[in-house]
Image (cartoon, rainbow, N blue to C red; front, side):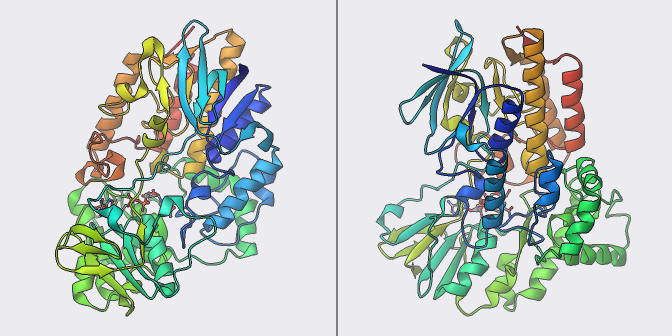
Length: 527
Ligand code: NAP
């Protein structure tokens, strides 16, 4: 059996950087990637309008100064093809492809206690032995295709936004239904509407969306940022979500109506997720939150011509407790003659026809159904692999009541298993790229430490893990995040335990990780 120091699962941004670091450390590594190319989320999510909701200059690696200086982004928010091109550039620039085996999914990983090594099996029938197993499987990579009774009767084409055909889809002349109104839907709906004969948007829960105000990134603006790239990175690292927004720590309730309106208007004109930084208590006080929610609802009423449609599009849940979207022309799309909003709260889906969807009120005849129904977030892709640790314990069983990790990086009973941006880390509440880099660097420093100390295994202690899970939940309970059915809580997947998964607060998390390492990996047992 082939033997390597580390097996890395996934060749997205996490897997690529992990491989680079391991190689720099002189370790042998094998990456397995299910797709035919690198890029992870940006390899799979090729739906029309797909782009990042974090600005390009920040949604990029910072570990290599030359890379950072030499790569040029063309737009404020990069579109999927450009981000995928960047991932490919990184793979080539650092000569990473040789250690990546594409078209290969890892099925199973078992910890062999006698050998103190992981035995990894792939869907290509291959087995490999490794000292370390690193899950770089991404937080939003296991698509959620809801099981809706009768859906198999539909004979037209169906697509999921997270598994979009590489050759693209031509909607010209077609009647199309999009199910879902999360970020993927909100980005794709305006683009599909321009092409389709008619578009039906099937909405179960309306979402808050702020205009992205995307546009070309002028070379001189880009150069100015590059001239002080470390300043931008530092501001990002110090902010709660790892993004260099302008964060106002004042309370929305102290400001006057006029001041609040001006602040929200300024943020609306700036565009994107920075709207959340308008006041320090938006995610802590229901009353403060209502002021932002009502401002956005007012904007929806201003933009959408038909007041009934505007009302149905207006979210009533806490602003920001589901991820806020960043759009290009989303609400205005509902002013088009060829777009119809279908309120699934009023008329739930009852069944399907060969050429349509039946709701409680009508038959909607369509040629194509686009499922923009999201992901089994944070744990889905990890648990797709049958991971078995000490004493034959399966990770699926261990996490049956919700994921349990220390720092999101390790889980007790599973020695030498590292997770990049795992549940219990800030991950999805941050700019993913710096979170990935911080996790990768922590893991590679940890491996380095083990090698220097002659340690063979490292494993989170159950006490540290228990305390950490408690802290993750306590932090969430201090906020308004648990007040709606978000995927942060696993609430979008029927039967998934309702547990808040990400750690809130990037700087505190980074500090805690550094402290653990400097205390000789306190909270982990080394042997
Ligand atoms: P999502 O936010 O989970 O949205 C899924 C949508 O599908 C929701 O509107 C949901 O309604 C609906 N849905 C699910 N099951 C349904 C069913 N059985 N019947 C009817 N409707 C159903 O998924 P997403 O839009 O793919 O986004 C997931 C995350 O990926 C985002 O929050 C973001 O973090 C990331 N993302 C980022 C970007 C970006 O960078 N711009 C773009 C896309 C995605 P309910 O709300 O009622 O459950």
